[in-house]
Length: 216
Image (cartoon, rainbow, N blue to C red; front, side, top):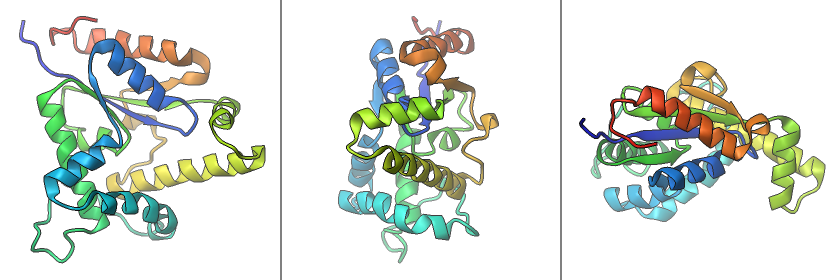
């Protein structure tokens, strides 16, 4: 039986523990897990200063909510060359992250957190896309454990963060971030717990990738 690589992408609501689930799954399976590491890898690949990628993440939070109301730049796989005036544009920085995501999908078993990876890899048969969500109360309680904010401040922060993630997703994919049809599996971490989410993903993998030669 031929052994082929598998990629798990995880989108998640703030406070749902999706990142934790992804890391737990990766450790359990012996996969690498990528999130912000993709920025460093895209910087090394493109030659663009890593700080610019970080600035995009921050500047996007301030400008995207207005920009995204009527604008889309759906990812199509293109890359701009260093000769282009838009080489270090927000859109091209995203394109380089997507390039790294595709290379990883072709080379190794891994878990990828965020970065619209489910859309970038939508045509890859070896990709399993997950959306992790939780009840408002669950997400709020988890977020309060890790941040020094008042309850009201945290409620606003979660709402703002999830709106940003949804707008970012819509801008680059043209799709609704919350639409279950974008994903292979949607999991409620407030009902399943983190271990339960990992177990559910592995059960799905056992069926979906039964011919991949992976031991679960």
